[in-house]
Image (cartoon, rainbow, N blue to C red):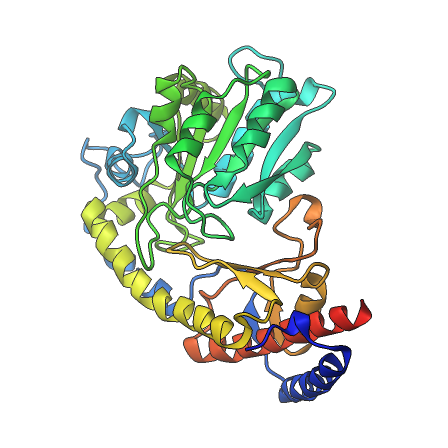
Length: 422
């Protein structure tokens, strides 16, 4: 296809007329499709239905009755499963409830209220800042914004955050207390942090002695086309003399059931004791029956890996459909660029500057709900108004095909109208 960005005014006007007619047909069709968040589809959830009746007893391997009180930090079997999946020693793991987001919010609140390692609690400081690699995960940014923490946008590269910028900022400013990271198949671009990036994050000099890396490995076992190995931030930080720097989060939310999964936080032994010191006032323990259910269902890390292969089989046709239609409709037009992730949950696209919000508005009026433009940046302010997150997981392949065709028409229409306005 010829590059639309190089069309004459007359050619753009002709194309606009054609696109408006096509768009009008989609609006009249009255479709209702939801691609707003990375929700697992029913077929994906069905893969875990065997968990409902798998319990044939309630005792853990150390003889505890999982129906009763006790075990603040999780049953040994669940710790071992997480340990085997992520390569983290069991004594550096705390098992939580259904969502790692809860654990991240709790971690932030502990730092705000109690501080860490004897440093002043963040909530008592005049100014607290956080680095936000962007495009990124809107719920991370929501936590920091709600707590009044100033967010600093860090551009993403193909290797992870712009580390030159990160290192310069953290070395100069003691009010910068942390960074959000989704290190593997990042949300939304599907980027995997390079070895160099992980090592630099672990070893960099920070003005703040209590600087924390919030390492949200949400897609650590979610390959679709190809798996990618990333370095262990806990090991790298320990080797660099900063063992307490990372707080490592993961969950089964997109592995089993999002509302009834199991999460974990991992850290140095010292930090684990600090976390438990506060947790003991917060809870007597999380749902041990659910932990036991997960262990009996997967049996071990290999069982979980086999489950994820089945999940990938349900996701692959959807990602292939998205990428195929983008390529067929928009390759070489100059109106859109996109990522081709090897795993994870999203495809990130970038429109012409100033066209993302208009594209999402047009798509919504045609019956397709997407994540709002700007959501992938702090304060929902995409400085160039270009980034849109496509979440292919929930619709069926047929629904996705319809939604993507509508999306491509809207990208073209918004882009052509922007070019005409210029």
